[in-house]
Image (cartoon, rainbow, N blue to C red):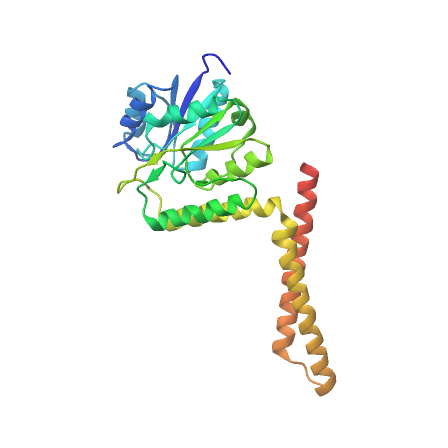
Length: 293
């Protein structure tokens, strides 16, 4: 165990002038430094955080949740932080629960701790439709080997190993699942602790539909890059099988009647093209990933 670890709270924020002050002031009780990334808010979010003693990273324009995390992680690396805590600037995450995550992380047997609303003793005020969406995304991540209940919680703790090895590339909300998938790739150990997530009418500045699609597409993209032969090769092979069937049917029709069935020929041709594109994509990605690894 590290004696007197340097702990940094990292708070991405966008138009959170009504809540950021409370979040920063409470977080300061449990960490050595508070970093706030004002992601192009255009309001008093950054100035309020700065007046309370937080170090503010300012984006000139709104780049997205993932971009804010990139800036925060980079600054935490520069500060040589032993542990960082990420939490939202809108008050969803209770800074008073920071010790729950830190205590678990300091046991030393894991690299990342996630505050989950779905484990025993955790709770959430989120609408049911949002919870179902979160569980769908979590299911995709779980099927990839990580045994989690809440892949979308942004209330997390990271040790030095995780801080150094996780390079975030997604600018949007999909960064939350990108981190977990890369954690699995890097052999990082992940655990969860129960937390309470609160919601209010301004809890999210993102359109929930766009938010959901962003996260879903990002998750599928990263999973497909990890298993290109499954995601692209298998559908490509099936498409070629279908095309072969229609080529046989088309040839048989031509042999018996001397005419070409336009519909059959179009289906055969289109499935052949799709199949070849998918198979080629699978082989190229598999080769590139094999070389990189």
